[in-house]
Length: 410
Image 1 (cartoon, rainbow, N blue to C red):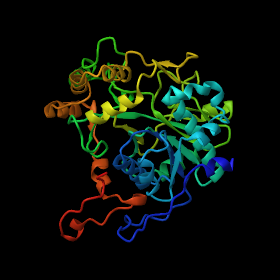
Image 2 (image 1 turned 120 degrees about the vertical axis):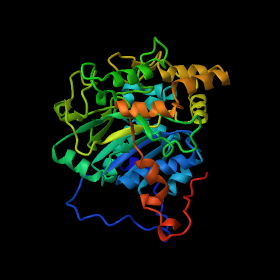
Image 3 (image 1 turned 180 degrees about the vertical axis):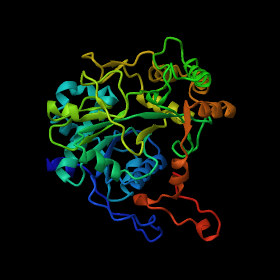
Image 4 (image 1 turned 135 degrees about the vertical axis):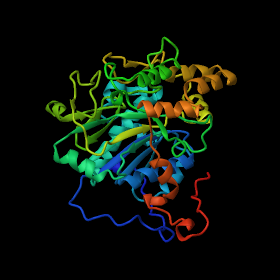
């Protein structure tokens, strides 16, 4: 098992003399510690740093970052972020270790064509590494354009509460970012408007006329035959799971617990329409309103680069009830693949502006007033102040001088 931990590259902690830690926190009883696992490919170094610093600021004890391209230049930037970051390059050695995973038997060589399978392999690999290394009790599976979020900006009490209650897995709702510019310079900090997860919307009986109109606004932006009528991406949520032997991913959204009886201890923040376990998960509202912020395709340029990199993937992904996986035909994901493959720049821009952006400020405020969208500004306000290890920078304007500028240029 130690072989998995050895695959993760530890790096020395950056010097802290230029940083001032956040205000001291009150002494706490021992809390459950959490880690994240993410697969990355072609993500700019500045965004990788922002992703790392945000999650370290929240109190995650470790970040497992799997670079799909072993020579990715952003891997070095990630490794420089401190000793809580584990950089794993998806090279020949890792691919050999994939073959020893429990989930490999279900998907085998499909990893070559399906990024979601590689994500599942990396998630189980990180679970084994975390168990072998020790020091964390929970693992959250995140995409590189997703941020874990809760208003307190402190995950420790949340995971301690789940742990104390005996929870084995917790499924979080996703709120979907809405860019208010065509090319946001900062994908995370530049997005403050979010479509609420469907479970957070008023039901048909309780919806006000303003809410009904706001919902219809989003639905009519997608092609009539599309199944993604409200969200552009998936509304299935993302999970945190206990780090225990025998746990394995079922999809990028959920994990199979080590024991069948543990399914009853797999909880969700919302009532699922379909459950990967064939039975509804128990709905338990976690204190502190933890969720996932999905900054999906929040830059026209990065959206084009992402789908050019993904290429001609198929119309299914791991998950769903069917043996071959879940269909993604007639979704924004598949439509993006097709329009980028067409090499028609104008068609791509038209699709992006009409389906992704919201350039009408008055409409944005109507969406918030109707309760369909919400404003979350903590990421924008916090990220510029973060340095390595998630500590807050001493900005010059704190002492009455000129505003400081974080080093986020590459």
